Amino acid sequence: MRETPELSLDVFSRCLNEVRRATGRRTFVLLPSTEYFNAFLFRHRTDIEGMGCDIPLVEAPLYGRLTNKSSATRLFSSYGIAVPSERSFQPGLEAPIVAKPNRNLADSGGSLYPQLLLSPFQITAFLANHDPADYFFQEFITGESLYFFFYLPRCGGPAVVWSQRNLLQQPNGKSMLMAEPAYFHQSGTASRILKILRDQAFWGLGMVEVIRDNGRDVFIEMNPRIWGPIQFCIDQGQPLLQAFVGDALASDTKRFAATTSTRHKRKRYFWLGGLAETLASGTRPVWHVPPRSLVGAITTNLWNDVYLRADSWRCFLHELSRSITEPHVHETPKN
Image 1 (spheres, rainbow, N blue to C red):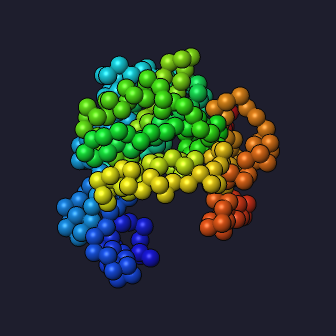
Image 2: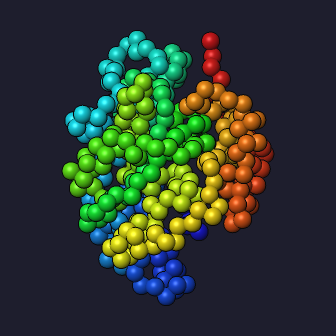
Image 3: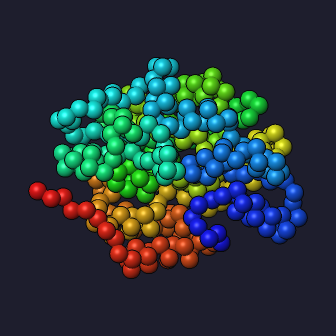
C-alpha cells in the first residue's frame, strides 16, 4: 500500500518488482483503465516501457484528441456525425444545458466531469463552484442512450464490436446502473464511427456514447480506453477483452476467442450498490426509458448484479453496508 494517494514512478516500480518476484515474469502488458492512470502512463511512457512493460495505447496527441470532449466533438462533427448544438456562455444562460470540460483532467491532476444543469439553481451553483473558461456548453439532448464498444486491432483487420442500451443511470451523467444488449453496433452510424477512427489511425479498446433522438444518432463522447460496465460484455460472451489480449500477446485477435463463455449469460447489467449509494445521498437515479418502479427493477434484476457472483459477493455486501452506514452529504436547493 502506498503512503499517499498520488501515483509516482517510484511506487509503480516497486509494485512492478513485487509482481515480478511473485510471477517470475519479466515483461508485462498493461491494461489501460482510468483517465488518471492513462495520463500517468503517458507522462512516464519512456521510463515504463524501459522497465519491460508494453503500453497498448495510441500516441498521446491522438488519445487526447479523442478523450477530451471539445476536440472529440469537433472531430466527429467534421465527418458529418450529429453533435449537440453549442451554446455561448453569457448572462441569462437558460436551463436545461450541459457544461462539458474542455479537458478531462485539470492542471491540478484532478478529473473534470460534465455537469447537467437542468434548472436555474443548478446553473447558479455551477458558476459559484467552477470556472466557465474550463467548459463549453451544449444543448441538453434526450432520447435513447446507447454505448458502442469496440476493439480495433493494432495492425488493422476486422473490429470486434458490441453495444448496450442504457436504462438507468446515476444523476449528473455518472455511472450506469442498469443496461441491456442493443443492436447499435450493426447500424450505419457505428460503421461511420469506425471509419473515422481508422482514418485517425486509432487502435485499441474504445467506447462511444450516442443518444438516438427521433431517429438521429447524436455523438456525446468517446472513451479511447476500457469502460465502466465492461463486465456486461463478458457476461454476454462478447470477446472484446479476448481480442485485446490476443492482439497484445500474439498479434491475433482471435487467439483467445474460444475462451469466451455464455454458460452463465446474464440478460442485463445491474449495479445495486451504485443505486443504493444514489438513494442514500438523497438524490434520484435517471431513467433513459419511461420511468419504472425501482423496487420492481431491483427484484427483477438482482441476480444480474455486477458483484453478486461467486468471486465478488463480499464486495456486493460491503457496498450495501457502506451505503447504509456511511453518511452522505447532499445539497438542498435554497429558494
